[in-house]
Image (tube, rainbow, N blue to C red):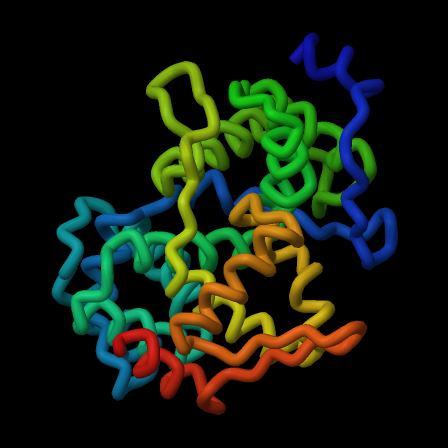
Length: 277
C-alpha cells in the first residue's frame, strides 16, 4: 500500500456527500457480492412474486435451488439479490416480466447493472465520482490501484463504519472492478480499460421513469447524477429523451426555460407493459 499512501495528495473529483463529513456511508459488503449474473438470472426465473421474500428464501434455501455447496454462501447470495432487486416487489416483478417477454438481453443486463450500482453506495460513488470523470477526460485504461486510492481517501475522511485496513481496501477495489467487468463497463482479463458502453433506449427509459418518480422536475432529471452510472453527460441525456419521445416511450418537450417530461402511464408495472410493446 506504499503507492496508496503516496497518493493522498492526488486530486479527486468532489464526492458531494450530503451527510456529515465524518458520517459512515460506505460498507465493505461489496467484497462478498460480485455481479452474480448467472445466479441472479436463475433467481429471477424461480422467484415467486406472489409470496413474501421470506417465503422465497425459505423455499430456495431448503431445496438448495442454486446448487451451492455452502449454506452460508447461498444465504449471502439471497441477501444480495433482495438488496438489489427484491427490496420492492414491483422491481423484481418488472424485471421478471421483461425477461419473460424476451426483451433484449442487453436491456436486461443494463437494468441489473443500474440496480446493482444504486444498491451499494461505494460502487455507486466510485463510478459517479471517479470513473465518470476519468472516462470523460478520454482516458481508457483503469488500474486497480486508482480505485484503491479513491477508497483510501474516503477511508481517511472517516466515511467507513471503522477504519479499513490495507487488505480490506484492496479487496473492495478488486471486487468493484470485477463487478464492473462482468457488467461490461471494463474489458480485459488483467489490464482493464473502458469498453464501449452502449445504453439501450429501453433501459434508459426504465431508469428515467424511476428517477422521475423521485424527481418530478424534467429539468432536474436531465442533470441527475444517476446518468453518470452510464457515462452520460447532459447533452447525451437530452438526445436519449428526444429519441424516447420519438419512439413513443415518453413525451418530452422543451420551450424556453420550461421542460415538459411526461410518461404515458402512472406505475412501473404499467410502464413495463409499454416497454414490452
